[in-house]
Image 1 (cartoon, rainbow, N blue to C red):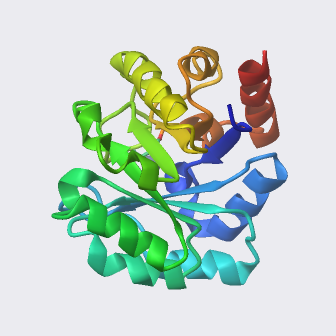
Image 2: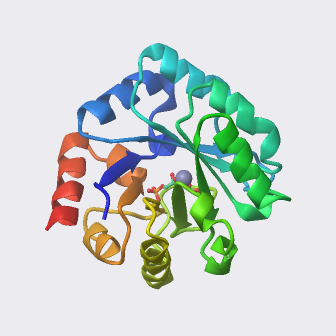
Length: 221
Ligand code: DX5
Ligand code: ZN
């Protein structure tokens, strides 16, 4: 397994002081910044775009920015995010007419590429493209909102995707997104995740370092 990554989702941060929030969460031990992009079309919510990503880079954020695109169509916005400083760009296959093309597009702009599977999306969508991916992101909630509960069937799905990744022999990250807390992260890690998005669990806590520390300890145990 690859090293553990904790990626706080800034969806649950205080947007009125976003730069400070991101600085604080990185100081507290976060590895990546998870950046949720929603378009009020693919998902029923509207968030932030490339300008905010660029603003974080200009603010001095050097950590990987893990862009989770919940937008349709996908391709048009990819170059803008690459220019804005995205490190990883992940998208939902349902939102792209040409999944293989979108993966190549992301990589051609110098970013790592991820594919996101909704709770009901079959893992067969990974057939034929797994080896082109840097990351698989499994949703353990339906995308659109922070603060939802972890859907238990995601554990079995993690185990199955873990097996596929291991069989591929490639260093593909397996990330989980939705309802990750200090008290369920150990079983999520045991099911095969190596990268963990956590929004409300981190940003609604008074002490970011304490939550992130507890999460890392639980994964390592
Ligand atoms: C949901 C987003 C998640 C969300 C997770 O559509 O993709 O990244 O912020 O929030 P929590 O950790 O609160 O479930
Ligand atoms: Zn997300």
